[in-house]
Image 1 (cartoon, one colour):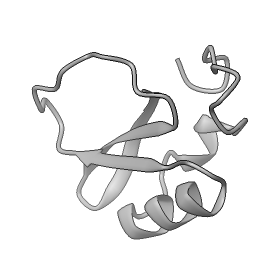
Image 2 (cartoon, rainbow, N blue to C red; image 1 turned 135 degrees about the vertical axis):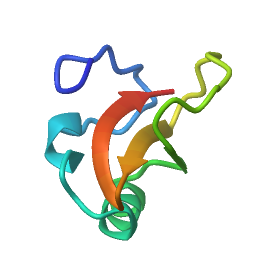
Image 3 (spheres, one colour; image 1 turned 180 degrees about the vertical axis):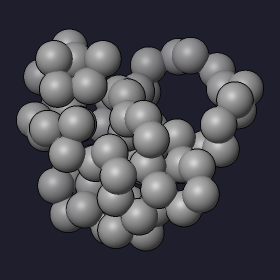
Image 4 (cartoon, rainbow, N blue to C red; image 1 turned 90 degrees about the vertical axis):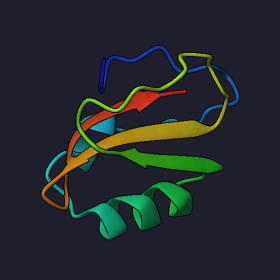
Length: 72
């Protein structure tokens, strides 16, 4: 669901695959610089609600590195 994700018209247009492998802080800072209004970093297997929030970018972070990125 990364670079071919379905962005809404109000989401920043971004290459989500580019975040994979970045350190958590670097990824969070980059996302905010690119216009994401909410950035959520989660541990692997975290239970989260699945409601879509425009402008939110989600990361799974394992060992301090981003392993997955998805919208909303």
